[in-house]
Image (cartoon, rainbow, N blue to C red):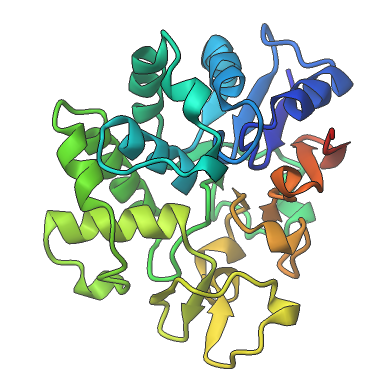
Length: 285
């Protein structure tokens, strides 16, 4: 069995198929982890969702901001932009079934560390037993237990019969500090933003939402990449997507950024976990 992890697909169905063929993916024994943003802006979000859903337990998904926005569009809360390229998906005969499936997907996934991961990632032995994946990362203001608790909380709301109400409540940028999240609505919104929108944070760990450039191009001196402030990832490997401008490059040894901007004409990136080998598929034009 092999574990494969892939960055933001965003409807780039042909590239995903090409990567799966490149690694001879076998759904009977292999597992594919997808770092969120399955849909939007690429040419075939419908085929992408159908494929991932058809893989059953062989596909492990985390929700990204575009996936959540799709759920809101389907619920009538927001309108899709032409650039989202969601018209075919929204008109599909199985759209309700696909949305029910998508809404039940988590914000956080994990799988066990391999024995070889300890020395290669400079982890303190016994400090952690899992590798984690979320779309944007983990808030510097959270411990692992906080992230797990909030991921379960959000998932329970999105999978409930009250989904539309909670999707309506997720929009907004306040509170951006976990210490100020007092109500369930506050915690829900903060968690959505931390798991799916975060790139930079202020020095106290509160979320910043405007800067998208890679750190080497950031000219602001009062914000920092989330992974420079997080203590959790010093002993916990973390896989994430969302930040395409990183192009898979990061200075921290324990994190694996996998969004390499396929939808922008770059490439789709897949990581095979046991040997840390990367597989690349250039965008198909």
